[in-house]
Image (cartoon, rainbow, N blue to C red):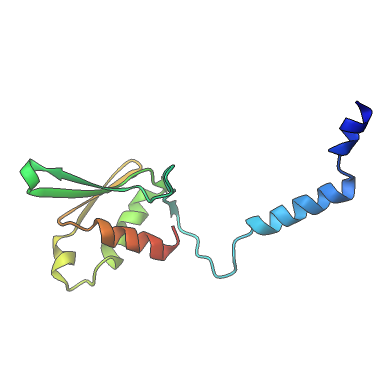
Length: 122
C-alpha cells in the first residue's frame, strides 16, 4: 500500500516545473488582439451562428448566440467591417442586440458572418 502512494507522488521541483509550463501555454501571443466580446464555440466545435427563416421565407435572420462580454461592440464592428460601406449589402444590413445575442437581418449572410468571426480568431 505504501508503494502505491509513492508511485504517483511528485517531488516539489516536478510540480513547480509542470505549473510553469502550463502558465506559459496559457499566455496570449504577442500579436493577439483583445476584444471586449468573445464568441465561444458550441459543444460540436462550431461557431454559434444560426439562420432563422420567418414569414414564409421572406424574412431571413442570422443570429449569433451566447456572446460573452459586450454584444453591442460586436454589433458595431459587424456593421462597420462585414461589408464595404458603399455596397448594397451594407445598405440592407440591420443589426440588433438582445442581451447576449446578436440578430442580423437583411439577407442570407450566415457564411459571411462565420468567415468574419474566424478571421477575427474565434
